Image (cartoon, rainbow, N blue to C red; front, side, top):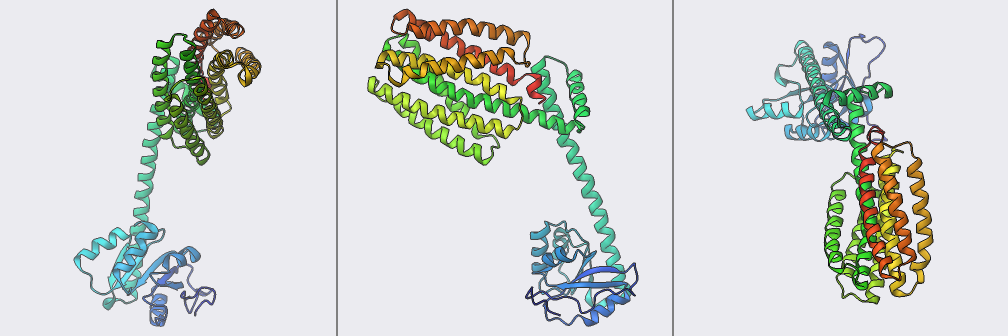
Length: 447
């Protein structure tokens, strides 16, 4: 009878009853047309210990199979072998979730291979169909489907094992590089952490690799913040006549570094929020690059700084989005340390601009930037995530920080400007190394 809620889908005239054998095969009967008379076939099914729990056509077999969950599909005299093959391939890509049997007319030699590719497990000529032949057909399809399912399961487990082996090897390499340990020690770390977290070693290894990937992404996005301020500071240096030749060389190097970081970030599997943030960074960089290539003057310097501030804001948003995407609290310290590079450059830049262009907003930004730098430096000094190398680098950073503050206070004098330039570059290099140390620390990698 026809289901009024699903036009074009017909159900079997008889559903299995309580008197049916408990071993009766429950199958979906696929007919050439909705109006096909199925009564003779239903009687033959009963003789072969099978019962149709529903009927469909090639166009509706997938929907019906999903609704009724039969044990098998029996396709009887389809309107088109090509149509059946297309339906099976489109829905299940040659691996249907149920055994599929076919009763049809004579087949061309090429159609046998096509049926195998589509996932048909057994077929029989309609002319010779009787109850024993139908019972044998369904049994043959069931046996082949089970064997194929077992082979697919074995293949899936083998591929999963190879995939886990790949992640384990990559994670061991990261730990060996980060900690200077051998392969056995690296695997011991992974195995111990996996037991502690109640995970397979492969699962934990993948997490380790992803943590390292996110840490590097945050580091690179953080570099864009620093580079935005460095490029504006270098333009101010040229206008002020402070190490002008070296400033031009550093500008070329910094611009190339921006491009390299953008290319690296674009190649990562970012979520939508991070993709939008990266697009904003790229647009802001193009604006800053255009401003840097204009003729340098006090007015042009103001435009450069405006574009640098836009790139800073965009890079800050990207870095925060990446930290959120990473989903690991330990990544925060990579972001925090990376931000110190930017603050050193921003402070030197604003001090130079205030002295060159007459105070204004640049002078007003000096105190908040110094307060933020000092607060973050204290947090890094007190952080448990440390090592002798990190503590020594932080001690050197504090000495250079005092030199930078002295340069800010004397930015109207040549020696003060020299202190600004030298200390900001030393701090940028110091916090570059520190950020890399945090990025490759065991705590971050194993977070």
